[in-house]
Length: 208
Image (cartoon, rainbow, N blue to C red; front, side, top):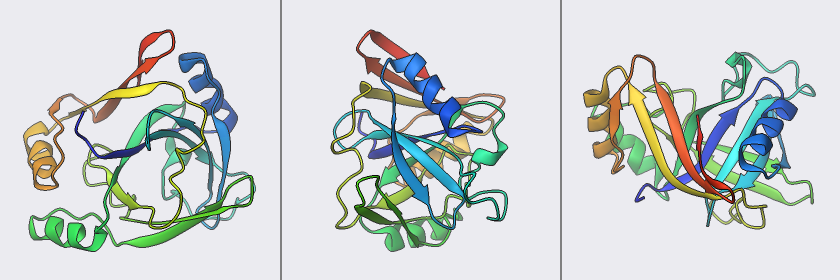
């Protein structure tokens, strides 16, 4: 798999329900990551290989006044499911400019941060998840800069071996993928959908 996958985003209406679902599927329980201050979400994490991880994300009940919909629309899922993915990039501004010349809006580059349970602050830059030009199939892009990658030190739930996508307009989305340098085939489906194949301790499982 040649995709520069940073992490998969598994949204849940409540963090505990998302954690339980992943534990039932992979046999390993994600660990609490932290809050996203001002963004209205919090998360739990599970490693899926070297510098690749699964993020379980949900609305944070301790941030009730953040405008909706949230930056990652965990407030719009009725049950836990895979909704987005993030790709690695170390030149976000150039990528946004290149995409814009092709008519693809990736959103503005912004900064984010969260404190880990051990108190260490993680910070990053990313393109706008709210832009969401292909309903979760086109990733947003992230650069961790000098922060340690969140996958380091996480419990491992298996190894991500494939990420697959379906979309009602696969030709258009595939062309965007190629323009962005992403070697990912997009197949036809009546609704946008992602699915990940993970080599878990008990065999290959599909996360969707």
